Amino acid sequence: YASLLRVQNRMAEAEILLRDALAIQQEVLDPDHRSLGNTSRVLGMVLLRTERQAEAIPFLQQAVNVNKRAYGGDHRQIADSLSALASAYEADGQAEVAEPHAREAAAMFARTAGPEHPWSIDANVRLGHILLELGRVSEATTVLETAYEQAENRAAENPELLQSARLWLAEARFANGDWAAADALIASIRTELADDADEQFVLLIEDLSLRLSVYGED
Image (tube, rainbow, N blue to C red; front, top):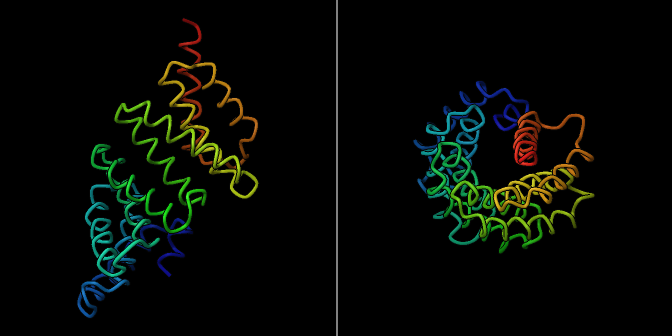
């Protein structure tokens, strides 16, 4: 039920239920029980969605630790927890801490679901974004070029993933000084932008477009 509330964006209600559930689980379940890992992850994601990343980090780290012990090897639940933890550290301004978690998540998704699965592509887009934040532009470009090519192959089933890969590859092109290539990618995004596109995504497009217009005038 808490997961349904999260999907419905009823975050305050979801948080209360998840905190209560986690408290009960910690009392009655083995510390390596998979349910503990799942509840910790979902609670961390709720806190992350409400921009409380510093609060989210301990729960997401707990989810990683529990899931690694519970599953023992590569598993989607571990990769999901690692990816969420990377997002929390990135949102908290700790890209250097986020990077190894994002890299481990991307590698695990590739091993468990295949390198061209949407989960793997999305994880690599996130990794590329974090590498850009760290100023590792060449490495980020390589990761994002591959993710973009793979996302193009799945465009019909997952157009949002393609748009995300385009945006961050455009950022990499901009960081490399290839403004024409960045502008072409932004133009492609605008051509296929859905009417109900995420507001934050649109703001990122506008921000890059503004920077391109400034540099294009120089």
